[in-house]
Image (cartoon, rainbow, N blue to C red; front, side):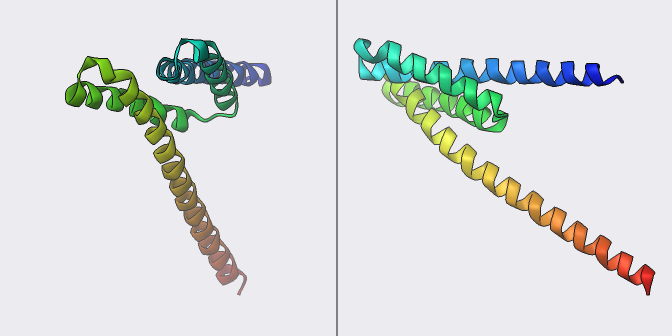
Length: 133
């Protein structure tokens, strides 16, 4: 594969991540704007779109997926428990919880991967010392 082909694939993936971030965080901004009132709607949507673009650009796909899942489950739970007029409240709260849990799970997964890499590095170093002796 050529070097230019690799760059094209990376830029396409980044473009998809940015679009996904804008979609998810724009939706969350819209839900927050609905709760805050019509005068804050453009501000909430704008902040959501910008934050989504930045998170997508930085590669926060797991974080965005956790927010999306939280939004859907929060909205469904609010619909089942309080009726259709409270869906936006539940979806907004679910998005917040999904984001919080996503950050925590991502941190734990990164710590686990670091431990595995450290253990693999230690076993490789131990084998190299055995070979030298």
